[in-house]
Each structure stands twice: as C-alpha cells, then as structure tokens.
Image (cartoon, rainbow, N blue to C red):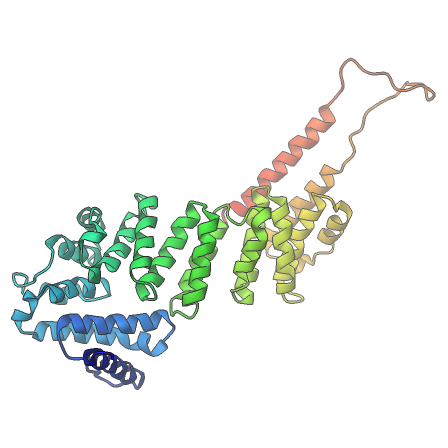
Length: 396
C-alpha cells in the first residue's frame, strides 16, 4: 500500500499545476516541511522535462511562493538535516538566492561547503563555486543533493576539464533518471562529447534524449546544441557514418534538416570532404521547395561534388543550369569560383611536339616542361583558397 504522505504530496502538486493552468492570480504552494515543498518543486520540474506546458508556465510562481514559505517557517525547522539539504536543492532548482540569504544561517543544518558552493554558483561567482564544489565526492553526500551537485560540477568543469565534466554529467543522469536533472545533463553533455568527437557516445546521448525527452519544453535547446556540434566538428564529415547522421536527423523537422544539410555541405566543401558535400547535397535536394534559393544551393553543392569526382560532365551541367538570381551574392561568387575550378581541372595541358616526324614516336626529352601544369595547379590552389575565404566568415 502506498503511504498516505505520498498521496498528500501528489495531490498537492496536482492541485498547484491545475491552479497554474487556470491562471489563478496567487496559486498557493503545498504546505509542509521545507523538504516536502522542494520535492513538490522537483515534481513540477520533472513535468517540464516531459513536455508539460502548464507545469512550465507555473513553476516560477511556485519557486517564489516556496521562498515565501521558507521565510515564514519556524526557525526550529532548519535544524533538521533534510530541511537544510532542501535549501541547497532549492537554490540549484532555480530558487532565489536573496530569499536564502534571509534564512537563519546559524540554524541551517547543512554542509557549509555545499551551501556556499550552491550560493556562489547561482549568484554567478563561477570560480568560487568551482573551488568549493570540484572535489565533492558524490557518494559521501546525501542522495537528495548528489544529482544536483553532479550537474553543477559538470557545468563548472566543462571549460577546464571536459573529461571530468563528462563523468559528472554521467553521474547526474544515473543518479536522477527521468528528471529535469537528467534532461539538463543530456543537453550539456552532448556538446562536450561532440567536441571530443566521440561519435558513438554522441549518438547514444542523442537517442537517449529522443527516447525520454523529445517532448521536453527545452527540446529546442537540445537540437540547437546538437546541430551546432555537428557543424563545428568533424563528426558529420565522415562519409562512412553519414547514414547514421541521417538517421539521427530524421527526428528533426524538415526546415531544420534542410538548414543542417546545407551548412554541412559548405563546411565539407571548405575542408575538402567532397564525398560528404555530395551526400549532404543529395539529402538537401528533396527537402528544398521548388524555385527556392535552398533548391539552387542544393544543386550548387551537389554539382560541385559531381564535377570534382566521377561525374564531371553531369556536375558541370548541373552547375551551369543553376538560376543565379535566386542565390545570395556570396553563393554567386562561390558558384563562379567552383565553375572556374571545375573547368581548369579538366583543361588539357599543351605539350609542343613541333618538328617530330609523324611516323615516329616523339622523342623522350631529357627534361619535361611542366610549367603549364604548374600554372594550372597554382591557379586551382588559389581558387580553393578563395572558396575558403568566401565561406570562412559565415561558418555556423
């Protein structure tokens, strides 16, 4: 049988969410001990991770009113370790530091390092928070705080020690599965794993997010980070795993996929990954509307890839058929440069054989004149450099 206190807590949370959804001017948060109030806040925030818009619209009011309950509480309640720990969790769940500073600090039964570290973190004193919290052992602190502390450690260490930050974010996910903490950890970790170019884990985290949090209120932020990582690293530039990238991107809306494939096409072209230019261009084509600039850009990238590989004639024809008026000026310059490069690559090298008898094979010269070839290669290199300049300043 489920204990009655959990029925009461669940009823209180549901009552608050319903009140927020009905736009009640002053929703009353659940009554009880501070740790119970914070549990109710966590329950509402977990609803946000699941996509509950009503929970999202009401949780700031709940945070404010829980703070008011804290200030009105009997000072004796803070001698309980559970309530002292709840203050730390409240802070790390979006609580107001100004409220916490008004609590009777001499009565709070909580680890000084954790309290001061949490306060420093939410007040933006990152260096101080890092020094206070970086060496905290998660298994040596109460479970009620460990997941939140792990998430904060991951955030604080992300710029100084990415490998440790990834470990802490893994801890946060494992300690609080199915919660907003896990959802937030996934959003942070996807960037660090991507920057480390660990594709297998990048794929694992993406699939985990899709499986549990695809409806989260913050899903847009996750996909923005996902796309940014793919276009700023080499993760999407390996033609062998490109089908796995496509499978992940199939979860995005049409417009986002189109934007991503066009961006990857340009990045791959600058970095000389011609096979990926073609793969991304071919994915972009069916996603782009007829008569749009995106359709012409898709043809531009696919045409370049074809002309520079095994479909020279078809690629050149595709480039020449592009409607220039639908392209932005930078793309027109890119088209001109790539057309010239494609033409120069196939330009025959003239070798003078004047004076050689028609019925005899040409003599083998002691030294071949390679100046025409050298000139062509130098020009091609210059054009490739120009292509990079055209795109460098506009990389995502």
